[in-house]
Image 1 (spheres, rainbow, N blue to C red):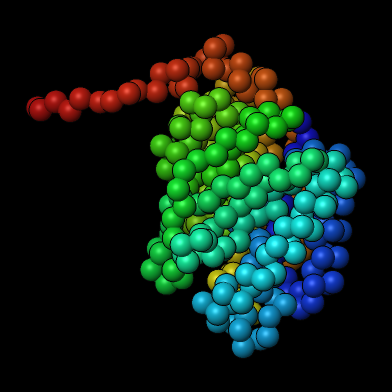
Image 2: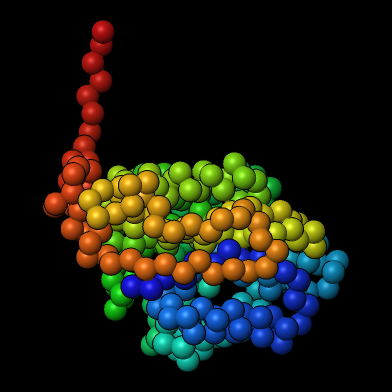
Length: 290
């Protein structure tokens, strides 16, 4: 499988046509290089707020309220791009006002035949919960695709073992991990989490981050991260578990990291690996005194 994970630079696009041209060119570039699955980062959809008046897009709460009418058009564009290029596209996430009036951080996955489903972020960071008012989603989704069985773990979710374990027990072989962090420390937490989940569950994890400075956006003002593909360090895999990783933390423009993975070889490690972490996951521990 040929994968493309984007280091997505947060740029100001003040009109729909400017933004649509930008995203279309970005997807076309990756697809023309043979990518079958394209991953963009957490909150990539917030770039839509650049089309709002300056006084609105600079307001943390007003920006997500006023961007809601733009989301259906964005999703239509994403679906059209996936269909026209014959690819699987996860175009990032966006804060969506749900039926209960709460905002949730939602990601969408499109295939060559249209929308495959959505996944909400389950565990909120302090910024999301305490300052922004983004609420936790409910439940995990497994995506059965022509490329394999996939799961989505949005940024902070990937730093916790239990959700990933639930996906592993459902036979997921590849986790899509869109991320958005504003420090190098945050970027390393994402990387360490991705490698830990790959090790524990003997599956692959693909990371796509936001990068660059966006002083016009109170939510995406500073961004650091590396795109990467991580696997269990075991037979037939890189000794450090890193299949591919972008070199810079914050390039000035959006860059695709292209890489390949045979999920059958990753899955084989569960029965033929040097270790069997997927099999040996303990159900519980007993604490003893002394």
